[in-house]
Amino acid sequence: MSTMMRAILIKEGKGPIENLYIGEVEKPVLKEGQVLVKIVAFGLNRMDSLQREGNYPLPPGASTILGVEFSGRVDYVEPGVTKWSVGDEVFGLSSGGAYAEYIAADQDLLIRKPPHLSWEDAAGIPENFVTAHQAVTLYGELKRNDNVLVHAGASGVGIAAIQMARSFGARSVTATASNKEKLDWLLSIPSGATEVANYRTEDFSTTVKNATDGRGVDVIVDFVGRTHWEKNIDSLALDGRMTILATLSGEIALDHVATDPNVSRKGGVVPKVDLGPILYKRLKIQGSTLRSRSLEYQSNLINRCARNFVEFPKVEVKRPCSAAFQDVVSKITGSEGDGPMRVYIHKVFPWTEIQAAHKEMSDNKNLGKIVCRIS
Image (cartoon, rainbow, N blue to C red; front, side, top):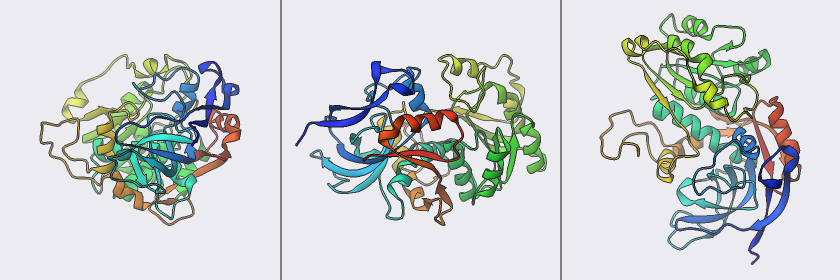
């Protein structure tokens, strides 16, 4: 059996889209608890562009090959692996390495692919829906009849978070985006937003107050940071929870890929903060990432309910036990399905057209996921 495989590589290790090419590298060497997956399709994410340009620090031990989500078939299992067998159809998360024919995957980060999902649909689920699950259920502690605000609503995580909140019984879901086309689309999809606001031209906190009879929202999922801070605090209801997943605001427009290595710092600096509303409204503000988290954390997020979570191993954390992500998967269908949550695929590219796929993502015109299929 050959020890080599094809993968998407980057000339000189980083650079523009034109530096992407298909080359040969050694297959990954499995560690304890891992399986070798022969990849059928992989999803594209904004972090891939940042990494390609040298502006995304990799987690320790991560593959330098791009890609954090994939679908495929189990090709080999290490001794001691109990959850999977050769030939199983799976999809899952990785800290890197998905733009390749094979990937070494931790058995606990794989999910069985349901027959109703295509390979492309399955590859478009892990990063967006698991991140949304983390923000909405674990940190957002969503309860039935809560009101929710989702920023960057037309992004992959935003679309997943909106549908998840609706599916779990939110009373209202307000979404923000930058243009009418995106806002209209978010209102039109099943389990889409109930209210929308153009953050460029409208005060979304006013939209939120109108939608909630002045009460405010219980949960916010934010990717923006500085420019939205004051309106976010104003939008939150008593005992509201906000999860910050990114800090995209600053000198670069929200809807463009952040290529400036200082953008996160710029978007993360709020010059003046009034602590009063945080105190008297008893607000919870949580920052979170996913790719850099430990294997134990990610495994718990996928396989366990959101109670007594790994960050608090010695503390009994009393909170509602939301479903594990494994239990959410059965509710996700393709865009033509009838599930309460759906994967919206913008376009599928053969991986031989990886440059065109990255160009499509950088143009930021897609509504839904960009996926590549390996041929």
